[in-house]
Length: 436
Image (cartoon, rainbow, N blue to C red; front, side, top):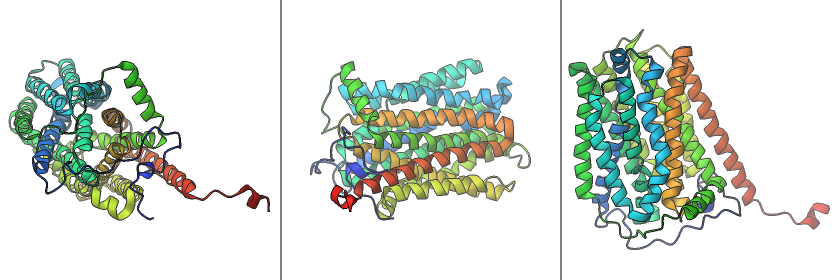
């Protein structure tokens, strides 16, 4: 399949309907950041640190779920709410906080969100009950909601379009490093001193990342403050939701994250039981596999250049499906290889879809990214809870079945977009010719 055009009307899943409010991508501004220009490295490092802190905090309890269950006498489904409540709160709050970023600035919103989330993270280890733990995680998830969409909008405004996929890939790579380092740190600290100490260690890691972000992030040079007019916001959101291309991208982000959330919420329960019986520290080290996500997300730009955006999505979803099937084997090596494939496919697909949203929406970028993030984290919340329920009902096979259903959804949406794009490229047949 030939690479997709770089025009906004054909990104990833085919062209939008003619009535779409999305305009064409403007000509590159020579003052925008790109590799080799002053400030690009500082920006990349700052947002990488923010990505590390975001995922480390957001999923801080995921690797600790078996220990949390044992401590509070909770089932897998009940303990999974310490993850799902945080991601659900983020999904609900990301749109209103992105609206505030349109008024007060991306940099200011990212700084405030990260500060509040870190402060709550330092309180989480002292939760006296499961209910209190879930409540604090809700606050933490809501605080983090101001960061992802604002980061995507910041990059779309400050980075040259040709470098946007690579820049967002680095931010997503920071997410994967945060998810990996937080879980590994939590696993080993929990094995030595318990899950509360593990959550404290993650809070300190996030604090260090927040300090790096504060001192490294460049000032925004292309941000124009907007208003907080609710009608204008509703009009902007309505315009994004009326765009068929953006709707497909939002659905793809949600479905990819459903798979990922289900797998990584439940994997600890599977590995701690028969036939593996792994200790908490080793289970935490399994998340070294996130390094694969770092590589695949950072390589998303090269994949798009070589295969086109739809081609890159097909490769990502095929890799994810293969990993799910391979993980069914009761052999540790096969499970690990399956996790490698699932992680690589997920992060590549997420980087392609999220960068496509940022390139497609040239107005109200924060809202466009916020809608993607809402769908993405609702998928995570649904995947974590449904994955735990499926595991309780049908074991690991039940979780895999849930993941394959989500994968099938991504394939169906991408195929639909491909056919729509081909139909729009066909020349119109004159009515006279049709009569002959």
